[in-house]
Image 1 (tube, rainbow, N blue to C red):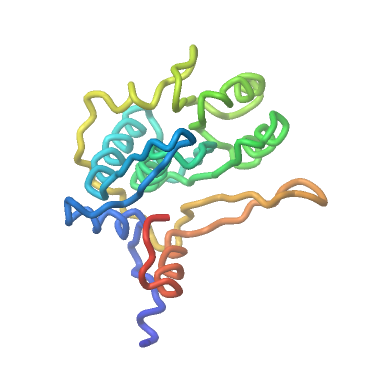
Image 2 (image 1 turned 60 degrees about the horizontal axis):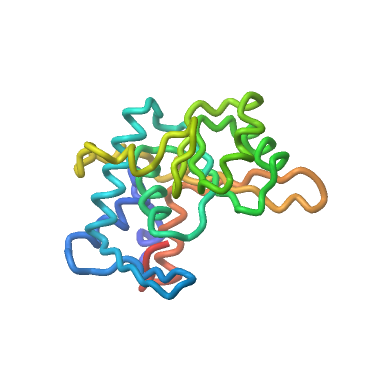
Length: 209
């Protein structure tokens, strides 16, 4: 391996390394099965189109490159398009578990100064309880429609399947994760876009996320 193989390009967005698989329209990105055994396959091309539509929707809402968004979703097909759409716009994603309670969400929202939250419908009531105490301006639900929340499927309607990915530097922040906080408040841990380059090196045949 050459030393140059260890270096990420100056301009790099990790979403581009996933989008490139969409050049093969039949290549499957993920296979998802629910508790009832129903299976859904999503190709990289479908994922590219849906994430582009979501990136356009986020941009139309007013979100800007470098702003933080809290994403609290289970591993459902929509989650992957949401992550990629946010990355394409250059947003910083703060992932969260469905086990988080109101105080946990409030701490993360305050610490990160998140501008948006995207969560499963079963968690919207927790965010509603802290809504007035945070910097969050945009509330997006996935699953059932919830009063007072923008709905993911509705946001996609009419949006273009084309999106010019924002140019991010390889050392720009892509993810802001939080530690468990067992001995105090959780600590923020950042991952730049070049983080995916390390995964590629350690797992040459890596798949989607």
